[in-house]
Image (cartoon, rainbow over the protein chains, first blue to last red):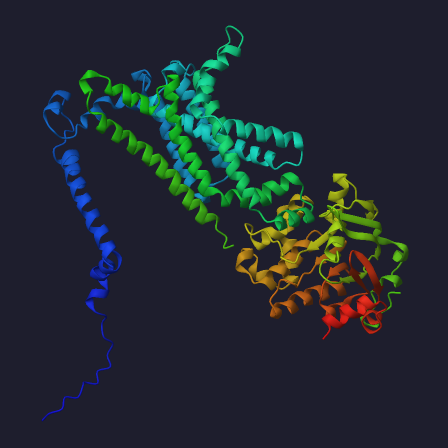
Length: 364
Length: 263
């Protein structure tokens, strides 16, 4: 009778195949309990129902270059609506021979935005470049000098209008919001109560009503003959509205600052504005980057509300395209296209802010 | 009155013509927090190069006294005169006094978003309008003095508590203050880091800095102070040389306090 002695093998054994690798990951993340398994199966079923038909519609059966008549016959997506109308969607009523001007303006803007992403390039020169860029953009859009034909602002529209309302709106609203937040923290009762009244009043009304006021009520108070650019009025309404929200977020950041930071700055002899500029705001603004960016993103999307005062922003030009009988019924394609543009802009802001947060992290 | 063998030869009472020149004069100081009377008739004169330790139980108002000197707290009655300037609501006076009075806090209060070097230069550059290059040179000198120069490019969050407190001392010194106030500078430190901070303070004392130190480090008081003040319930109960103070305390309250902290 033979006795089998277990082999004295000391080499490390591999873990069972079921606990590592793809199978292991699936087991421990998707099928680790009976209810997780159930949820996984439901999700897979829903995806199966949604994705293949979407791919079929948007890619396989889609039309990219065909005319609208052919589109109507096929069951797939009609992407030709985009390129057939791209000029109107992007530029609105801007005179077609002059559309290179808003295009150049947007290219300048995107270049500046992308350059500004890299914090190593932040300098006085970049600030100057922004200033020069904004001047150039304004000049390109308006025209009237240097041989450029004048284009009335009533003809502005589409993406340049959306971007302009947003970029100017957000860059003006942010510092204004910071000033309002400081005002709300002020020890001077007059300043404090004025800012509180302002913030609460603005936050208490919807943006739409502010836009209405700026478009319809405000001109009633102007003397006869004095007109005020409609876009500018909408711009001011957006700035006032966004600033109030930024102010409250910044106030949260200011309140989170330890008292010791103020005391240390005071004891060095820094005055109020130095303390705020050098010590308090850099820290307070940093901690409120995430909520601030949320506000900026939603303000960016809210610029589409200017349609109600008959400004043709990107969303409105798209919508107008759809009222053309030739292209009726292709709203899904058109809106998806606009959604992608909005998404790219918002995603840019959100990654930019995350990167900024990482750069500013000093290991506190 | 301020004769102490251990303090070598920078005894202020023997100083040149400064004998009558109190750099800080506090006369009949009262302060309330709401209804609570925290400081009751505080009178104190500090001469140039004099070193004073204030001790006492918590809530006795010792921190509040030194915080009044650079107006981190406002007093309601009495006078505080620093180097000939009286503290009032006049912002100019407050700023002038803060330039001349350095302060070190229990929790360091370094600026976490600035490098160590920038922490030190922010005061000289913006308050004293020193050119950046000179300010950085000055800062490096002080960092070497507190033996931390190699950390200049780091951020406060990357340093130990003891290192942070030494940076905080250097930051105050960069303003070339005439008086240094210390508000429990070692209370928030791990025990093994207390000594490195005290050593810096002792060096400073040997260089003739005028210092007012709120602390429970009785060893430091014995070896460095010209005078020890004992405060309780918002009053200065006892003021004496360290020898007298520790060996022959006059008041019952002082005796009780000493018996509790010197085991």
